[in-house]
Image (cartoon, rainbow, N blue to C red; front, side):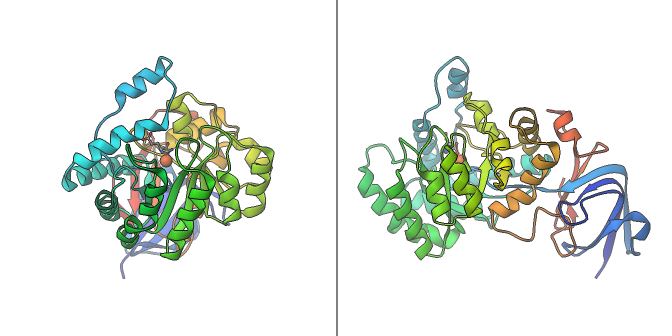
Length: 381
Ligand code: NIG
Ligand code: FE
């Protein structure tokens, strides 16, 4: 098996036991890391790549995105910026456009956004359905998402579609829609929020998904306090996402359960909502992930560097905490032990920064610092 040594790494933020190394090297064999450590001790390899002192970080693990959609909601964003509040009902606009789009049109849009993510250092992404909301449209959304990732999430319970009876729709989601979606999905998700699905409905849907082999996750506490976070903790879900409005009891439940709180600051940026309080969560011992929530409505960014900059500037995270949350934290939120950390045996997924340190991700907001992205031991951008 041929090997490659990546050397000349000025700073290597491993997120593993070795911590932050200076003047480091990594050896890649096939798609995995075979060795990580100080450059002076690097074993010989068949090929050598010298990064000239640049910083290397694990590829970002974006544990929350909605990339299967058609249409544009820039007018809705524009109205928001002049005072119209965000309402989950906008989801139905995208549902109408997505149902009309051909498979290849949807797939091309996902490919474009995944390529955009790669250019910004993301090497693994979770992709949800949720803009189809019929049996056929949810199943095809997931089949398309599956072409790009093995972390696909069935979100038939995004909103109740226009004209549907809520109870009948929950029956559909837990019946024929779940049957059609399950073969293409690893996860099941529910938008548990006033105006979407309540805690009883969410529990019913998550339990039905579990019976079909899907692991649960939730959208919760985005627009106000509610029961979603505590439900996620009670059910032992891997992650609960948004967590913008939290009571003290929510924070305690997160700390006790180990459920990852995934914060999505691009949403607060794009909806002018208050920032989630990452510091409060971290100080309570909660495991925090950062993800993009890339979607055409509440947040149309695909950039984890941008999310890190917001988390550091406005949510009380240190640059080191924010980097962990966007890499190893994302992997935890997706219950994966192969990505998010640069250590022997992990996937050789990493980003090379045109900067001497990962700190520049927050220090130089808006600057495209990702010079190279490697996925499975190969350059992807
Ligand atoms: O994660 N919260 C629900 N779903 C998306 C918003 C989708 C939309 O507005 O189209 C979110 O923010
Ligand atoms: Fe979302």
